[in-house]
Image (cartoon, rainbow, N blue to C red; front, side, top):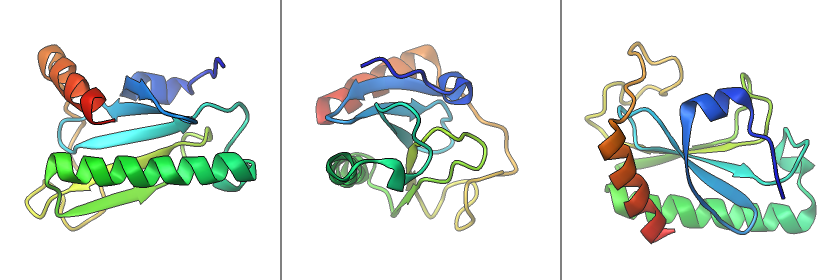
Length: 134
């Protein structure tokens, strides 16, 4: 199934892999280890827009990705959110937070520092490592 990614997500994210229902992306901001899961279904803006079967699968995927990502990063705390205030397409953020990150303990939204894209080599390596755990 071809799902058109919202232009803002396409601009900000790098594809990693497909799961059962979701595609996993790396948010291209090296300040925070940050994944975005996008259900491969058209026309969704809210979690409750998923049918029951897809909802259960998406929640299972979110749980598994967050758990593996927490182990991979050694995070102090995992933030999981489906906000959609700027990007209406349903997407779920999974963010590894650390007590020494640039904005701890505040939320990362509107952090007072511009995004820092990964270098090409670092992004390639990270995506390869993440594909191996998902």
